[in-house]
Length: 84
Image: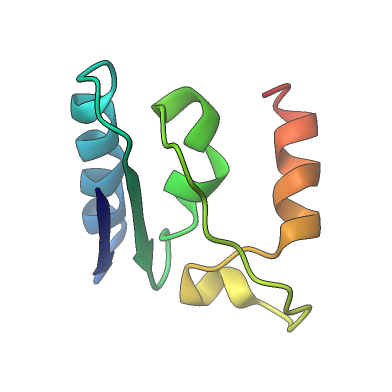
């Protein structure tokens, strides 16, 4: 299952994370994400949220996190830093 939405606020982005927490352990493969500010949270914390697939970009554009995106290099760095 894949769910993608637009986060109009940080509360919206937290609801995506909350949905992932609710799905964890349900025996289904899922990917949840959002675009806009905070949309990268579910991607960054995917390993602890049980997300089975993470969509990242190869773009090195400045401030892509404002769009809710994260590039592959930064995602790997974040996972290493967070010890995922």
